[in-house]
Each structure stands twice: as structure tokens, then as C-alpha cells.
Image (cartoon, rainbow, N blue to C red; front, side, top):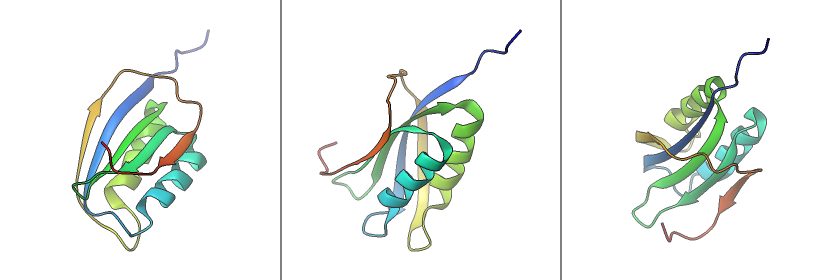
Length: 99
């Protein structure tokens, strides 16, 4: 008998020095390595917005990266809330700040 795989879907908002420091590109690399699906996008207020879907344990590793960021970034805070699972098929960088 197989255990059910617990999937998580999270909305993550990262604040601090997180734009112009390769945060989105590195987030995509980490997501692809961990098999996290969703997207990352800059927001007009200087924060970064992420929607991510992954297995529970994988999500914890991904959130660990989000708390740390890139060497050039300075993460001040992350806000994580559960959202409805959509079923993303990949992880992409969205451009623009219309969120």
C-alpha cells in the first residue's frame, strides 16, 4: 500500500533587497532542481511574488531557499499562505509587476 503524496500550494511574498539581485532567476533554478512548479514575479512595491506547488517536504526545502535568497539579496521577510492547487506544469519567471 502506498502513502498518499501530500501536495502543497503556497503563495509566497518575499520582501527586502530582492529585485535586481538575480532572485527570480535563481528561484527558477532552485525550483527546477527541486521539481517545484509555479512562477515568480516582481511586484511594483519592490517585493517578489511566488506561487509554488510541490510535495510537502520539497516545499520546505524551497521555502528555506526563499528565506535565504541569493548572495546579492537581503531577504527581510517572507509571507507564506496556502492557496488552491492549480496544477502548474513547470516553473517560470513572469515579467512585469502587475501583481
